Amino acid sequence: MKELPSDSVDMVFTSPPYNMNLRIRKGKYCSRQIVKELSTKYENFDDNLSMDDLYNFNVDVIEECLRVSPLVFYNIQILTGNKPAFFKLMGYFSDYIKEIIIWDKVNAQPAISSGVMNSQFEIILVLERTSPMSRLFKTAQFDRGTLSNVWAQKRGKKSCKTHGATFPVELVEKAVSNFTEEGALILDPFMGSGTTGVACKNLKRSFIGIELDEGYFKFAKNRIENNEQ
Image 1 (spheres, rainbow, N blue to C red):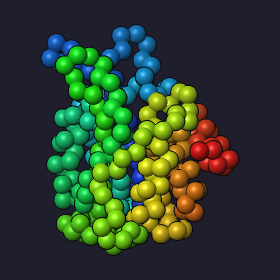
Image 2 (image 1 turned 60 degrees about the vertical axis):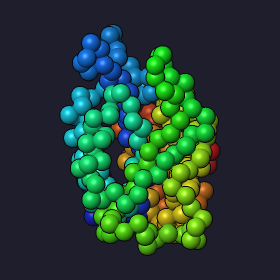
Image 3 (image 1 turned 90 degrees about the vertical axis):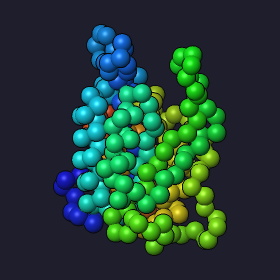
C-alpha cells in the first residue's frame, strides 16, 4: 500500500485477519497451536500475533488506508484473541469513525464451549478522513430513509477451500453500490480469495487487490478474471 499515491482510490473495503489463534490459558494469552503452526482459517498464516503487535499492525494499516482513500470500510469480528486490540483501535481512530455498521449474519455460529454466547454479527467500521464528524456521506447513492446501518446478510458459500475467513459478495456489493459511483476505484489490501474484486467487476468498478499469500493471490486473480461468484 505504501507504493500507492495519496488519495489515489475512492474507497477501501477490507477485512484484516482476526487473530483467531491467540487464546487464553490460565489467565494468559497463548497460541492455540502446540505443534507446527497451521491456522484454522488460513493455509500459510499463523493468525496469532501478540495483542500489542495486533494493535500496532492494524493502526499502521488503517492509517495507510486513510492516506490513500477518503473512505474506509473495515470489517472486524470481536473475538477472544483480539478484543483489547480492536477496542483500543476504535478509541485511537474515534475522530475518524463516521459510522458503525452491524453485519447480521442471520444464522448464529455455534459457540465452541459452554457458557459462551453464539456469534451472529460482525462490525464494519466506516472511517472517513475529510468530514468524519458528520454522518452525511457526500458520495451516498441511496435515497433518504432507504439504508439501515444493520445489514442482514448470510455468510454465503466458501469460494476457496483453504481460506476460511471470507465474506459474501453481496455484502461488498451493498457497500460499493451505496457509497461509490460507477467507475470508482476500490482497494482491498487483504484480498484473500478476491471477493471484493468480484463485487467490483459485477458493479463496473475498478479494483486493486493486495495479498500476501501467493496461492490466494493466484486464486483471486483467476476468480475475478473468470467472474466466478
